[in-house]
Amino acid sequence: MAKWVHAGRMRNMSLSSITYEDVLKAYRLGYFPMADSRDSEEVFWVLPKYRGILPLDDFHLSKSMRKLLRNHDFTVTVDKAFRACMEACRAISTTRDDSWINDQIVEVYCQLHKYGHAHSIEVWQGETMVGGLYGVSIAGGFFGESMFSRVSNTSKLALAYLVARLKTGGYRLLDTQFITDHLASLGAVEIDKTSYQKLLEDALAEEGDFFRLPDHSDGSTILQSITQTS
Image (tube, rainbow, N blue to C red; front, side, top):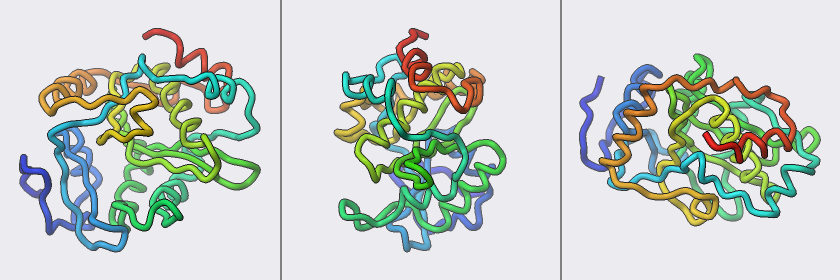
C-alpha cells in the first residue's frame, strides 16, 4: 500500500497494483485518483485544497428542469450499463479531446461496481444511452466522478435522479470533486479542505441506502423527493 501524501498529487503509481479496497480507503481519507490522459499508464492521487460539493437540499431546479421531470420521453435506469456509462464519460467528442479516465481507472471502478460501491445512472432514448453519470458510494457519502450528455439536458436529468436517490436514501454528502460553471448553476459550491474533511467525517458516520428509492420511479416522484426537506 502506498503512502498517502498531502501534496496535490503523487505520480508513478499504477492502479493495476492497487485493489479496490485501497481505493475505498483513499476516498475515506479525502483522496481520489486521476490520470493525465485516457492513454496514460500512470495515475496520481488528488487531495484538492478546495473541493466541490452539491448540498442535497440546495439542488437548483429550474422551471425547464421541473417541466422535463414531469414530462419526458427518456428512460432512466440505475446500474444497467456501468462500464458503458464510464466509457461514454471518457469518450472523445467535439467538446472534449481527452479524458482523465484511463484504462486502469475503468477496470478498478468496474470492480468497485461489482462489489456494490460504485453506481451509474443512465438516460436512454430508445435503445441508445444519451446521458448519464457514475460515482462511488461509501456510507453516507456519494462521490460523483463524471457525467456525459449526448442529448440536451440528459446529464442534468441523470443528476436530478441521483439527488433524489441520495436524499431518499439518507445520504449526507454529494462530492463533485471540482466546481464547474455547469455544476455551480445546479447549486454546487466550493469549500476548503478543512470544511470538506468535517463533512466527509459526518457522512462516513451515517449509512446511506442507494436503493431505497425504487429503480423505476417516475419524474413526479423524483421531483417530490428532491424538493422534500431532509
